[in-house]
Amino acid sequence: MKSSEIVATRYAQALFDAATEQDCVRSIQEYLAQLASEAVAPYLQPFVRLLLHPSLSWAQKGALVARLCEPIEEIKTRQLLKTFIDLLIRKERMASFKDICDLYPALVERARGVVEGYLTVAYPLDAEIKTRLMNRLAACVGKPIRYVEKEDPSLIGGFVFATRTLLLDASVRTALARLKTHLQQTSVMALPTI
Image 1 (tube, one colour):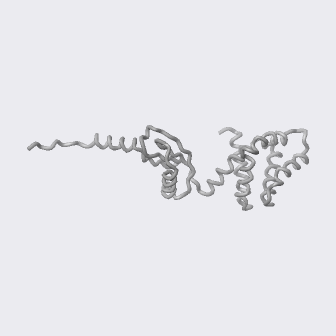
Image 2 (tube, helix red, strand yellow; image 1 turned 180 degrees about the vertical axis):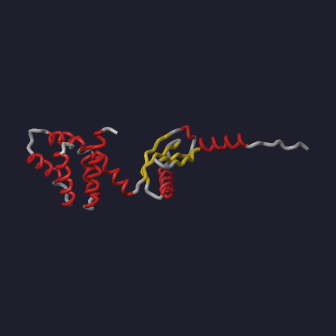
């Protein structure tokens, strides 16, 4: 992990912890999502560069941050984000702001107990089948699931679901391999002819 990723992870965790203490995790997540949205993201980097510019005084930077946080209706959310961004500026970590915005939702989901995994299928699944499958997997795991879907035609059929600690392989390829192994290990006696 690069040092910039470590910094972003630490600051995102600090923001999450502070938001948890002040009971505004969701509203922080919503506002950060707005900042990371396609409509706003192109303007975020120039704004960050402006805040990093040495010719701006601390008062000017504070006024810009206050303006950025102005649309936030909830007072504690506005104050927390303003304080957090001020901290990033003082510690010269504002360049990590976009990464922090990207990391925050994963922290929220991890706190909710969401399991992240990979679903590998032989071919694209129908939406209804996928929903039923994910509901069954969530019931097996006992937690909500977020997944990335991949296709691998060599599975022939079925699926493989993998997390950091779990592997569920219900693929036709694996079933055929098990059957082959079983048949090779089983001795077959010839029936007597009559």
